[in-house]
Amino acid sequence: MEIFGTNIQLFEEQIRKEFKIKDIGPADLLLGVRIQQLDECIILNQQHFVDSLLDLYGMQNCKTIGTPLVPNESLLPETDEERRTFEEMGINFRSAVGSFNYLSTVTHPDLSHAVSSLSQYLEKPGILNFKAFLHILKYLCGTQELGLYYNRPCNPGLIAFTDADWGNCQLTQCSTSGYLAKLHGCLIFWKTRKQPLVSISTAKAE
Image 1: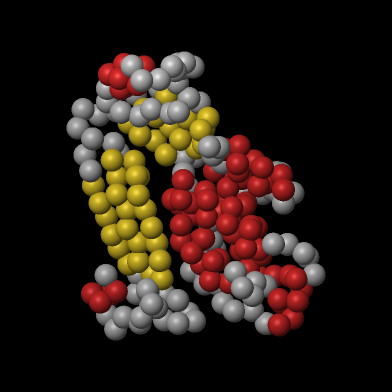
Image 2: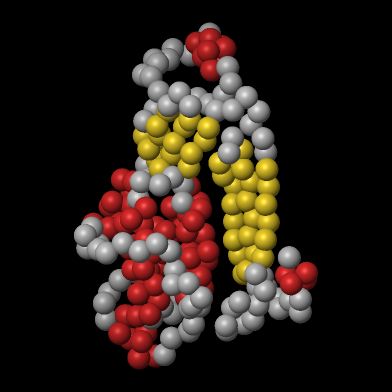
C-alpha cells in the first residue's frame, strides 16, 4: 500500500492499531511509474514503459524529433489502398494508440492532442496514420526521461487554464478545446477533445 499525505506518521499509527503492517520505505516504482522523491520535489515518469514501446516497434535508435505531430498538418481519412497496405503489416493499431493514451493520461500530457488525433482512426487506420504513430515514437525517444515535476512550496497554489483553436480540423471544421489544472507547479489534471459542433467564431469555440 502506498500512502500519500501531509501527516503520514499519524496515518500509520492509526493503521497499526488495526493491522499488522511492514514499512518497506519510500516507493520508487508504482504501477509502472517511476517515483523520485527529492528534498525539493517529486518527479514522476514512465521511462521504462517508453523503452518497452521503442523496443517493441524497433525504434530504440531512431532519429529523434521535437514535436508529437507534424506542425500544421492534420490527419485525414485514407484511401482503400492505404488501408490495405497497413492491414498487410498485421499491426494492432488500436492497441498501439492505447499505449500512447496510457502515457498521456499518467505522465505525458504533451501527447494528449496527438492521441486525440490518432484515436479518430482506430476503426479504419491506414499507412499514413501509422507513420504518424511512428512520429510520436520518435518524439518519445528524445523525451523519454520527461515527466511530471511537483515542487514543495509552502503554498501549493491551484491554477487552472483552458483554451481552444478555431475550426482547425480540415475534415469537419470543428474546433479542438483543452483544459488543465496545476498544483505545486505541476499538472494534476488535463484533457483535450474535438468539439462535436462547428463554431462560427473564436468566442463560440472558447
